[in-house]
Length: 232
Image (tube, rainbow, N blue to C red; front, side):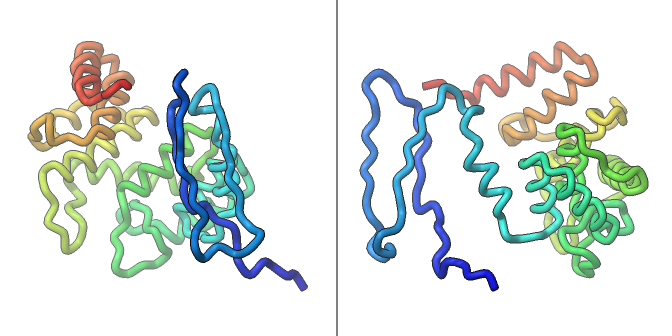
């Protein structure tokens, strides 16, 4: 029989800062309900942001929940092929008739999520893991139907033009990266003012134009991103 601690350790507060020659002072307080003789303060110095992801990896490896989205994230974040294979075995049960992926299997209230569908295809592409061909074909078909207006807004929602724009650009970016590019998709997007476009969607546009070798359009998007960037 395995005996586990009655109180599991967790992060109470954290701070990420750039340290200059002056240094930085951070006040630290002990929580009032802390268990005696437990807890610690951890300070870590890193030359770059990319060199300090061990705590993120540890959290992913020990995350207790097992939804498809989280299983995929854990597999990619920890480069765990067996976890990925486990997620892909569950994938067919999460596919809605449209080809979009549902967060939970056989969820009658769900018509599938284009964001989750695009996310799984995207992280598979970046990580080198593979989505089973039969499932991938259905997912690509689902995203294509969304882009071409054959799949409408979420059930019961009042989708704005901006949200429709964001959903379609997100799907186009993934399919373009997978080699399923169609330039006519971009001309059929809803008309949205630049200031209404979220920064994450601008980054997706940059990726699309890079894959389509649209240098002038890339420069336009880069200027928009730079205008939103604050350096300190």
